[in-house]
Image 1 (tube, rainbow, N blue to C red):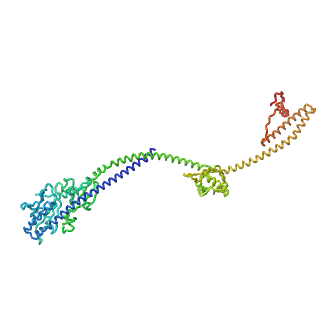
Image 2 (tube, rainbow, N blue to C red):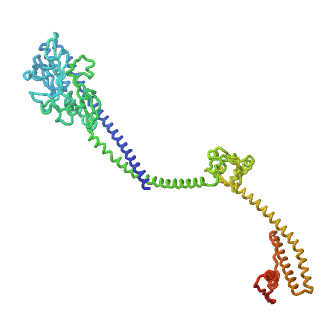
Image 3 (cartoon, rainbow, N blue to C red):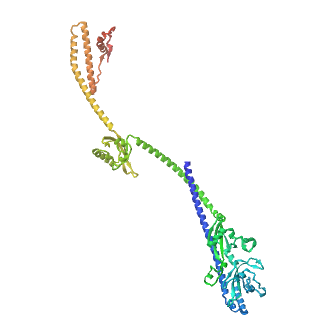
Length: 605
């Protein structure tokens, strides 16, 4: 039983562990998918926030470049129109505080106008404080623009007097050339967009504590992340070249190729989306005549990184219910398998007992000298033991295609059918019933049968099961014995009749001999004659007794012998015996005849 218990318990525990592991894995995958969707939503929210902010910025700049004061100054670059331009740009700065600076440079790079952003509002910089910007990279880049093109710088930190301004001011510089009617360069307009609000707003749009949300520029440098020390690496010599692209080159290349999606690595899952850092890809670019040179069309990447270790720790916190469920399943499996093992053990023993019983029954049936059979209510044989071949000459297969009455002659079958229908009507057993069958070879075989009814689960009669024994030889022997008995009786009767007849025939002359001896003994005789006649009379009486005994034997065989109680004289009986034997004894040498002397006490009652 212990082996059966282990055989059931170990697979049950294994399957339970596998099932719970699959459930846990499915739960983990579900949570991972949920986290992926949450990170995708976080990236999508950041993308929407940044795209909306950039769209507003580019729309505002387009409005500024299309103001009437700027067109009037381009047409007539007079001091009056310039003053009107300054006033109009100040109003623009007052309405658009996302711009840190608005400046106008002359063709040589000298500031003609600068409006600074402050907490109290826009500040117009006095003329004596205007600076030369001819050495700045954006001046040189704008000067290389074709007419009507717009320059957009990379997002970097503002520099004042050759030093990065602290606190950091992330700036995007957007500029274009200002031409008069003849196409002569009057100067350039430069708008410095302060990206603080955009970066902080995008960074706050996170949906999960598991992921790390970051913003990368077109070269893979961090513009925003959860590690401030790695921001703006391209602005400082000690961090130059240290960026996301350098740390995750494979992921970075796939990001450049696909633009958006999710990448699973051995470290974690990266969810990313590219956002255009130029009017291209935004609403304004689709219906306004704005052209940005290809080299200034840059994409930023919003990236969410969800490291696997944090995810694993988060998910394993949910493993306790599964552990408890596994323990409970193991306990239930132990109880169930123990009960099942006991049941299987009992069933196994029952099956073994049944098998032994079947083998015993099969052995008895197959080795029995009797024919064991079963038949339905129509007489069709439904089972036959192999003994039928020795008894009737048919194989078991041949017997299955026959009715039991097909194995009899016509007359014997009619008689057997009548007895069978009575047994069916009474649903009763039949014992020691003899039927004459016909051997396959044509011989007559007498079988003595015993059969009992077979019943179904509801008690209905299904047929009969029986056993038949070949009594053909027995019947022949009994017939021969009966014939011999009759012959013996006839011979005995003839012998008795002969003896009786002979006894009567012998008694008649014997009576005459005895009578003559009796008469002779009454005459005068010599002693010797008297002795002879006495012995003749005694012998004749003895012979008559033998004849009577023969008649008694005849009476015994005829069953008519009667016993009588009579008195006799022992002396006389023994004297008669001696007299009969004295003659034969007298001829023998050296024998003396002794005659005993008796008295009357020798009479035997």
